[in-house]
Length: 347
Ligand SMILES: [Zn+2]
Image 1 (cartoon, rainbow, N blue to C red):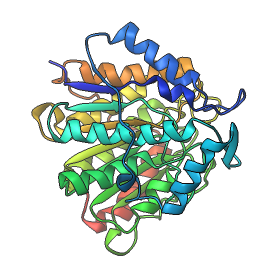
Image 2: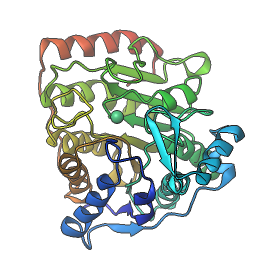
Image 3: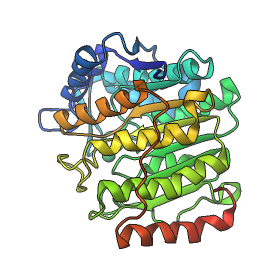
């Protein structure tokens, strides 16, 4: 038996217009919804979100930032940052994107779903408390993590960010927090050029941020090996009550923005690895996925489809973990263990 899986579906996400040549365009979400009809009809529950409430957004964002977003409704097109254009209805999509993640948290914490995929736009992981950027308006995952703490008393939340870019927003917002663990793998030669391996958190949050820089030479096997030796011990040691995945798919080989060479299979394998370590099928840790990047729609559709297939498939499958990896991947794992094992959070 597969898991009980919920997904977000709302045509208002298409109303966030970014211009003809922008990679984060409405076709991404349109094609994902078409895939739901084609491949998952009757196998997942679809949910239409409500906009997030102001108090929920303001646990993370400043009132000035919120005012700036609302003001964009007055113009047909404007820019929140040089790379982040918005249209008159974008603010609505942004409130709905955050709201979809809150709805996912409610459904998971109330045990109506075991896994939830917020198929939303704009993305969120680059958004800072007072600033948009990197195509992101509100930090959907950060807002949802604070909501899970405030409304559902979640004591430990793990955020796994496999988007090819470093989620500097999530990283910064929770850098001094020992209740929300941030794990990210990313290409540091890309925007926003942050997330060095030595950045491990500060104050009480020291040891609760794991930044892993990817090599462009890494293969699918390397990636699975890397996650099995770093993320899995974090899941076992930190024992989160909720896992959120900042699910960007721009590390795929066809992606026009990323520079990595992973196939769509990697996302099925990483999902299986997380499901197994989190013991989701046995009712332990629920999973929330929130769409981040992924800019080649046919590849994006295959990647998201692989994640949802894995969630709805027979949950007793054992993840296939390679015994070894390339010398560079082995070296990266060695460095991470050397830096992080002394903190005592990993098992
Ligand atoms: Zn990205």
